[in-house]
Structures are given as structure tokens and as C-alpha cells.
Image 1 (cartoon, helix red, strand yellow):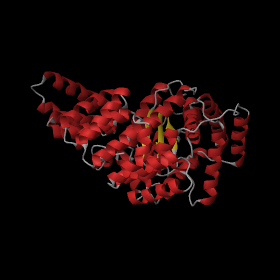
Image 2 (tube, rainbow, N blue to C red):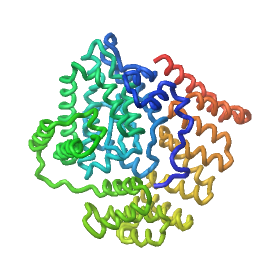
Image 3 (tube, one colour):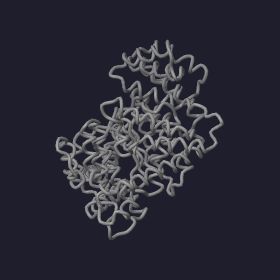
Image 4 (tube, rainbow, N blue to C red):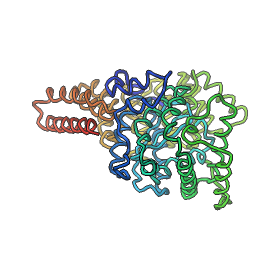
Length: 494
């Protein structure tokens, strides 16, 4: 669950993104539609442009993602990111989505929320894992969001509204940033304010969108081999949350749930073949355990919680044991953690989550050689595995093997070019390995992915000055500087 340097630092980024977004985050008492107006993102279309093209949606979605990343804490847990990406890819293959290439962002926030943005951007709050009891319920939320994308509800809403441009990416950014940062009444107020006018006189169309997303989402769920009944179960849990909690899940603010909607979802599922058994996905429960460890205020509290589960009733004894081992390692109780993990690792010595957990325990003991050998051996059986690769880079870094970590991260940056966490970590590693030009190049890529073009240009210019005698590197940096300047110009013209 660790990284080379922890979460990418975002201090100073907000002031470099857009002043309107700063005002958005600072003004939570009087929320109004000015939130959307302050952010310099365009509407998806207008009454005269007709249905917005998929290409334009993709371009706007990428711009939205850069801005969102710059303001919201995202997960740097490679195991978790990999799990969500693989799950989304599997579900997308069974959906009617035309472009199945998605950008996945995992938001570190305990609220139950997920969202989809035109252009193939899908976000998942870590709190969704805490709320969804199993993989099927988790997948039901994701297939619903995929359905909104596949049916192009955002563009169709603009076409239907004719005289309105309110459903903008700016308004969506405002709402989702507040939901993922404030996570409280301010987020609810912003959601309400930015949607109030858009929903006025258009509730019927919105309900049609939700009904269609329910239908398509449940069909996708079934095609992907998940239990279609999970959609109704998840809706039912969300409705209960509105009754027993002070504030409903963030997801409900954009996806209202009613008794009739739950009944419709259950009816659709019952019409399908649900007679066969749907096995529990153990990996989901393990990822859920990781999030539960991180969600506790202290490792000691997490230890007590998982010990109580092992002694009492638990959904998954394996996940509870795994969570306890992670919590003990986090508390630097290496012997206890190793003893807890031993039965799992003995049974499956090359299972990636268990191998990485043992490597963390080894790192607590500063047995870096043992941890590196363990990960390398497992990588031979799982070549190219993202969590294992990042685990190996982390361990080399902790051991002071900066050149080895640098080589691994450089290769990984070519495989995952749009992963800002890798670029940030690579910049840190370059610095400790003595590659100053590499520091500027990696930091520039990090800032590009966060939409902070001014800082990206600064680092590229620093790199150009230092690389004057290296023709190839100089040419690469020069071209990248031109690319960034073009991106910045495009953003101004939109």
C-alpha cells in the first residue's frame, strides 16, 4: 500500500490551474451556478451546434481529467488501481460502448460515489468499496455509469434542451471536486445548485436517461457474468442510507433512487437467467480490506477491527487475515504480520497480493534483498504485472538502489504514459540518481497530466538549457515544449 514518496504532492497546483476553480473550492457557503461559470471549460455543445461529436467529447474529457487530478487526492495504490482498471475493462467489453478505451481515476475519499464523464473518463471513490458488499454490487454501479457513456446521455441532453447550455463539464467538475474534497454539506449544496436549473422542467428526460442506464447497465452486468440482481440490491442499500444517515451517499445526488426504481431493477433481473450460482470474487474482498486498513485513523484501530472479525463473524476470513497482516505491517509489527500472513502465503506462494504484503513486511525489517528476490521471482510468472513492477521499484528505492528503481520506472512510464503518479515518482528517483535533466522532463509530464501547462513549460525550458550538448534529448524536449504550448492554446480557445 506504500509508494516511493507517498501521494504526489499537489501544493501550489490549484493556484496554477484556473482562478475560477480556486474560487470554487474556497466559497462553500454561498454555492450557486457561478461555480460552473467560473471554470473555463466549455459546454459540451449548444443549441446551434447539434449533437457534439465523440472526438470532441474525448478532447474535452481529457481536459476535464487533467483539471480534476490537479485538485483531488487520487490513489497511488498500484494493486487497487490495477483491480479497478481490469474490472472496468472487462465490463466495458460487454457493454455497447463504442470506444472501450477508458481513463480510470480512483479517488481517495470515503464517500460512496462513482461518476462518468463524456470522453471515456470514469471515476470511483474508494468509499464505494466500503459500501458495496461484494463484487457484483460494485460492478452494478460501474455498469450503470458505462451505460450513461454508451448511450451518450450528456450529448443527447444538450440536443433535447435546445435553449440551455447548463449541463457543462465545468459544472460537473465543480460538483465532483467538492464531493471528493469537502465530502460534506458543501458538496451536497454544490450538486444541488449546479443541477437545479438544469433539472427544472426536464425531470422527465432525466428519468428516461436513468431508466435507460438501468436497463443497459443490468444487461451489461449479466453479459459480464455478474449477478444482475445486484443492481436492485445496491439501489436498496442506497435508499436505506437516505433514511438512516444524516446525508445520503454522493451517488444519490445525481442518481435519485425510488421504491419504483428498485422494483423495476429487480423485475428486470428476475426476467434473466439468475438460477446459476455466482461465485464470490475473493480479489474484491482483498481490495476492500486494503481500503478498510487505510480508512482507519490508526493502524492499531485497524488491527483491533480485523482481529475482532477473525474471532467472530466475517464475510471473508481470508480478507480479514490479509487486512490484519497489512495493518500489523503498517504498525511496524513485522513478526506479528508475518505470522498472520503465513497461512495465506503458504497456500499460494505466488499470489500477487500476498507476495507484495510479505515484501512490505520484509521492508519493515529492512530485509530489502529478500523482498526484491521474492518480487522478482513472482514477476517471472507474471511478466509485466503493474503492481509487482511498482512494488519492485518501491523496494529498490527504499534500499537506496536508485539506478535500479530509475530503470524500472522509466520502462513503466513508457507503458503507462498517462499515469501521473509514475511520472512524479520517476522525477524523485531521477533526482536521487543524479539525472537532473530527467527530473525536469518527468516533472513536466506530471504537470501536463494535471493541466498545469505553465509549470510544465518551466521544467521543459530548464531541461533544454541543461541538455544543449545532447542533441537527441534536446530535440525531444523541444518538441514536447511545442506540444505543451499547443495544448495551452487549445485550452484558451475552447
